[in-house]
Image 1 (cartoon, rainbow, N blue to C red):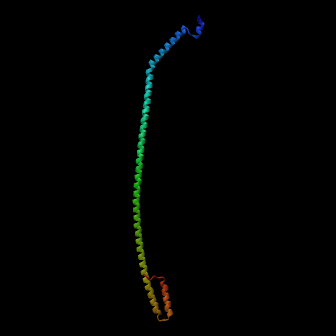
Image 2 (cartoon, rainbow, N blue to C red):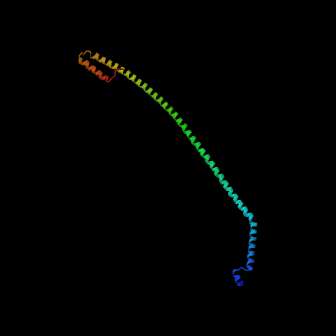
Image 3 (cartoon, rainbow, N blue to C red):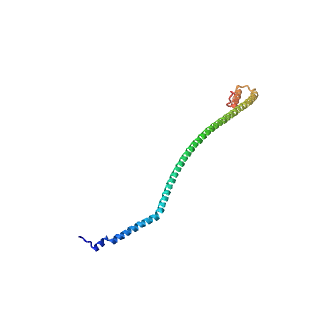
Amino acid sequence: MFTPDADLSRIFGLDIDWLVATGFAWINLAFIILLLSWLLYKPVNNFLAARRERIANQIEATKKNLHDSEESKLLYLDRLAKIEAERAQILSDARKIAASKEVDVIEKANREADEIRMRAHRDITLKWQEARDNMRVQIIEVSSEMAGRLVGEYIDTAAATKERLLNQAIMDLGDVNWNG
């Protein structure tokens, strides 16, 4: 049978010393794990729980902020719609006011134009009457002068003289409208 050589077993380290050292190492490791878990379990667990709670709070705050921002957006859109409706109402009112003022301005302008026409008609009538009166006076003056010349020239019975006086009187009158 094969007998293990003492040197050969030392090369692989499978002897009792190695087994005892490995056993103590595993026991030390288990002890350290138990000691560290007993000392650090609660603080690490508390740290992780606090972190979970912080993350949950942040998620909740984010959801709340999102909900608040959606509400703000809806309020903004509602206000925007109300402002648009108010703008349309203001424009409609302004158009109505402008239309009524336009009618008032047109009526006032028509009244002023009628007054100007009436004044112009009165002025024209007055000027026409004044011109007619002036023509009558001039006709009377021309007639008087013609009568004076006729009387002065009556002694001269020649037809040429009468015709000359008549032509001169007609030229003195010019283009007078005798209608009235």
